[in-house]
Structures are given as C-alpha cells and as structure tokens.
Picture 1 (cartoon, helix red, strand yellow):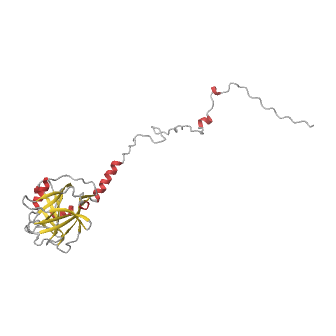
Picture 2 (cartoon, rainbow, N blue to C red):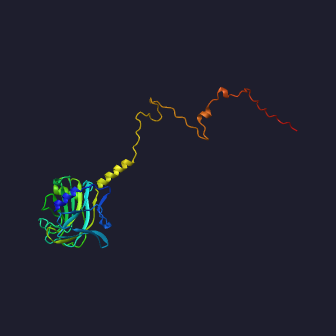
Picture 3 (tube, rainbow, N blue to C red):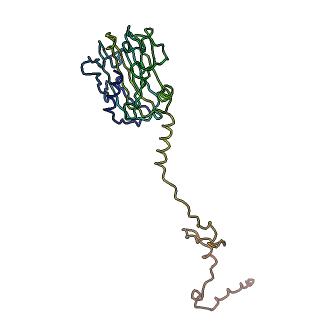
Length: 298
C-alpha cells in the first residue's frame, strides 16, 4: 500500500515555488487545498474521505476511514539542505486497536505524514513516515513491514493525548542521514494519509497546517546574493594615473588655474605689469600742487 502511494507520486511530480523563508504546503486554516491531489491506493480499495471543517473556530482537514486507504499528496522538487525542517500539527480520536507498526496486517494509522525523497527511479526512492503510533513508543522508529525503503517514526503514540492537538518539528535532512546513512536526494513530495484497510477498523484523523522551513544559512546566502546584485560595481582607478600635484615624470606640477569667482581677484590681476599698449599716451606728468602760501597779517 505504501509502495503504491510513493510510486504514484513519482508519476505526477512537479516543481513548486520555494522563495519564502517558510514554504506553506497545507494552508488548511485558510480553507486552502491548493496543490494537494487525491491519491488512491488500488482500483477496488475504498477511499478515505477528506474534508475541511471547523474545529474550535479553526479550519482543519479531517479524514474519515472505514476499512479504507487513500491519501493527499503535495509534490515538490526541493533541496533538503535548504528546507530541512518539517512543521505540522494533528489530532486523533483514538488509535487503531489492532494496529501494529511491525506487521503488514496491523500497518494502519489514524494520521501519518510522509516525506518522500526521490532520485527519479522507484528503486532509489526513500521515504520517512511520521505517524501517531499504535504500539511503537514515541520517539522510536522501525522499517516498514512492506519495504525497507520506508522508515516509520513514532512522533506520537498511544491514547494518552488522543483528542488533543499536538505540534511537531522534525529535521528531515538529519533524520534521513540517520535512518539511511547517506546524503538525501531532493524532496519529491509530502503526503498525508489516514487508513484502516489492513485491520478492517475505522479511524478519524485531523490535520493542521503543514510547512517546510528554510535554513538560516540558505536565507543568509540569498540575502548576500541579493545585496551583491543591487550594489553597482566600483569603477577601477587607472594604474598609470599620476598622483595629484605631480607631472607624469614625477616632478611637481603647477597648480591648476582657478576660475575667477565674482568678487574675487586673482594674483595675476593684482600684480600683472601693464604692457606698452596699456601705457597712457600723455607722458607729461601732472602739475605738482602748489605749496601753500603763508597768509599776511592783517
């Protein structure tokens, strides 16, 4: 069942826009199902129903399963180093009584979220399946009884928190390296599924918003690239440009003439000797003023 889900995902994989610091995949609180496609499991198998409802004045996605199995898939093409953190919330009414993570007949869950890592071929595809476990203790993980290419992780477990919302953040990049012992390929998609086809029981699961968070390093790198694009390059200074105040041969140069400003006389205008053309034509000296004559006594 899980193998069929992943194989179908590969056939419909598309690119997604990922320019924000947090890539919102499931905007269920905004009554938005954009990008989420129905994925059936087999032609004759009953389908789980998914609907948006109000839960305590908040819109969520609710799944009802009765001996059924089908999911919702959001296809991607992302670098897990750039978007390493998966965030989501969920709630269940109860676990599945006959559920058992280690057996094929018990491999059913009220809620589960897959992260699918694809290299383009089914044989190379790996997945991490975060579940609300029936028996597996919280924090533990096992390989799926159907295939070793899927690791099942108990994000929650048991009935203790049934009926309550729980919130989770997982570093999917580090989880992949831990579980599979290699560098992860691109994230091919995120899927959710509520199923009870193997046990023949019923289950109700609630899903809150789901997102992938960008790493701080990726954000910082993008910010630096953006600043580099916005900053104009500086014009290089000519290497052979002579320093100010010297000639090309290194000798001191005379200062550049200043442009006369209104109300300012230059030294040239103060001290320049008049030339011959500027001499007055009358060369006679003006008469000297007569010396004052003493007045006679009256």
